[in-house]
Amino acid sequence: MSVEDEQPLGTTDPPLIVVLSGPSGVGKDAVIQRMIEQGLPVVMPVTMTTRPPRDGEQDGVHYVFVDLEEFERQVAAGELLEHAVVYENRYGVPRSQVRAAVATGNHALIRVDVQGAASLRETLPEAMSIFLVPDDLAHLEAHLRARGSEDEEALRVRLAKVEEELREAELFTHVIENVEGDLDATVRAVAAVIRAEADREGREAIEV
Image (tube, rainbow, N blue to C red; front, side, top):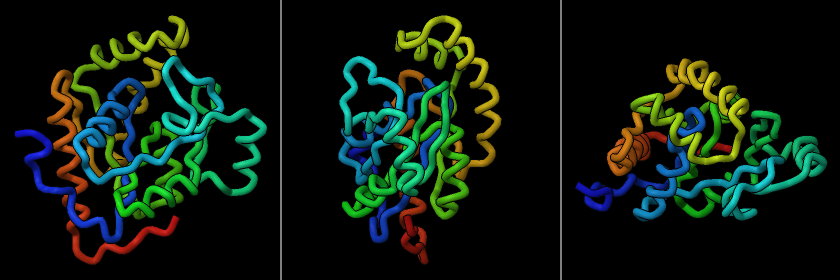
């Protein structure tokens, strides 16, 4: 059964705010991209970062790329819903991006690392959270190596962090395994838990 054969994600009135997290290389971006390709009613607020763009990344599409001075200005102005230092770079979720996503009438799907998700539990406790885990750590390592964006030492640091991050899974509303080679199955699982929450009676809009 394809994703298109599933029922829609439920009412978007009010839209949900969903936090999608998991260790680096687990496939967060791939899941979100497939959901968008399938026409599911989700919008991803764009994260702000001080790290330089990787090949093919576009400002305002993949990330909002800024220098450290601008990032700190955003923090001081209270414009970032959460922000953190990750591998010597800074990342944050602009409030304006989340508000704009919700204003479309679609569910706002915030993709953050584990540290960012911890911050969002404090600032958006009403948001539902989904934690992606790999079906095999070897697959996750292969994805990280395929990026080619880090030297061996940096890669070892990142891999050492994975097991620590996986222990955070119990803090999330839902834990979903991303099975290698079956992305659509993962998307169906993510869509199912979003649909269940969207259909829950008595939901109220989340103030951002």
